[in-house]
Image 1 (cartoon, rainbow, N blue to C red):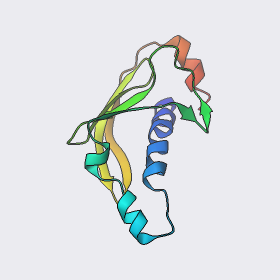
Image 2: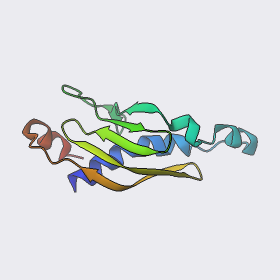
Image 3: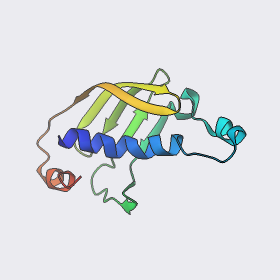
Image 4: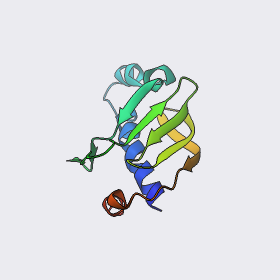
Length: 112
């Protein structure tokens, strides 16, 4: 359950940015996210619900390869999966997550 909430918090801001609506169809077409825009970049989680998060250890991040393999760090645990970009929406499927005993971080992420 915690894994799903963290991943939703990590991916949701990117999806919302990709789906931002514009008044003009022309502007929307120009801002539509495509695979080359998001691939081979390291996306770092900095805010949840517009509140800055503490990154005392490793900042949660998501890295997408050019073929949209997703890898990232949830602070202590690492995750991986296969991303899909369709109609400006990013979806990550077939996910896996390490299950390290990260007691310091567990209580922080349970609030999500």
